[in-house]
Length: 204
Ligand SMILES: N[C@@H](CCC(=O)N[C@@H](CS)C(=O)NCC(=O)O)C(=O)O
Image (cartoon, rainbow, N blue to C red):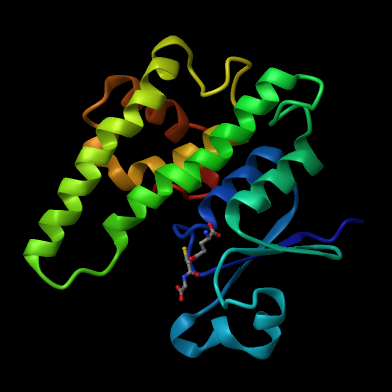
């Protein structure tokens, strides 16, 4: 019998959310291992062997140890849902779009949204951060809106792991990118209501 995949995280709602959601969609056996930062559990010699930066998420799947949430999702989708939750190499155009949105969700979208969660020490700094995210949201929506105006999911072929990545990241700019944009708001509504997302507690 396969042993469950171990998912190291700090909470349901950290960047382990997308990994857990994907594993729920794929129905692969997994086990949550929650580390307590305040107790030094992110920096034990055992955990640093798995993730030298002492960060989460990390997975252990048999002899595979992997960190970086988008890399984990690419690996899990190809290994346990190839052609189902991600396009195959033969579906060349869809595969290229899939890779683009997977990497865009963290490399471009999350880079902006992460600012909202960066420690700021004054109301002035908070105002600057919000102005930046608002301005950037206008640019980000130029990529998302035309696609989501014509289809339910980011790939024409249907729901994929790329929707999980986007769906986990977008709520970080709820006010500027989601609520203010009907196609994105409707898209998020579709994603929020998925059973696997509910089981993974992504939006709690
Ligand atoms: N780009 C990485 C980010 C990893 C990361 O920074 N994770 C946060 C939690 S969401 C973390 O472990 N921060 C260090 C800490 O909390 O001490 C990924 O997507 O996996």
